[in-house]
Length: 295
Image (cartoon, rainbow, N blue to C red; front, top):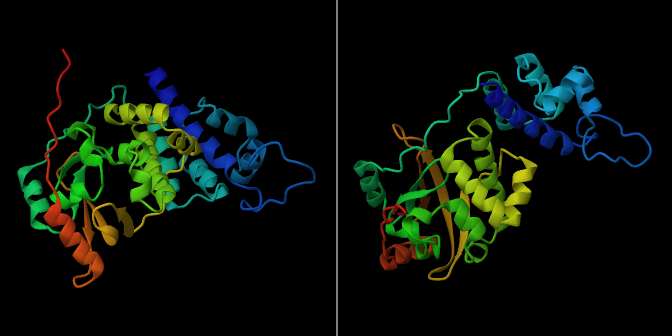
């Protein structure tokens, strides 16, 4: 129990350190002194002063040796670091987890998609739609939802994952004109999940793979951002239908283990809607193949 609690304290410290080194003295309301600063962002003593805690106490927090900060201290740190609402909530979640760590990690959630949800995917055609797990595994799609991510059907069903596609598929940079923004939002989502459930087996396997195979992912992971720009409109440079801009709506699916549905929409009568229709008509729907156990 003590070792597990220490690991959760480490996660709290990593988040504080990442946010501290990315917060400038000016943005925190401080006037930097003369000379070159060797420390990026705020110094530990500056943040401690802004939050109204001792430098020794803050240092223990950042090093994972203090695992029970009070709500008042957490709020003071959030204010000093100028955290937004989502980052503030993430810090609160990390503090709660550090103090009340569950000794055993929960198993990976089921990948099963209920039949009525698969029917829902077909009902929204020709709008491209998909269902993903909490770690962005593609669990089910309609034809357009699979075809929109050009080339993802090259992979076996159990390998299809939106984060894996963004970072490792050679077509992703061409499909997304704003690839840099897409990957930042993707990593922020995974980082937020990892902060409160770092031992989740479905997440640790994916993150481990991406850290090894993608320098871009590794760099963003180190930044520890937990909020990203949420685009309600996405543009694709699709090899089959050309440039297509669609509105996007994501939604949590009640009664599922963290599954979400994403739907793309275009205004009828527009070129984007025509391209969406063409994509749906020409798409070949391949169901994810069942996983095979190695012998």
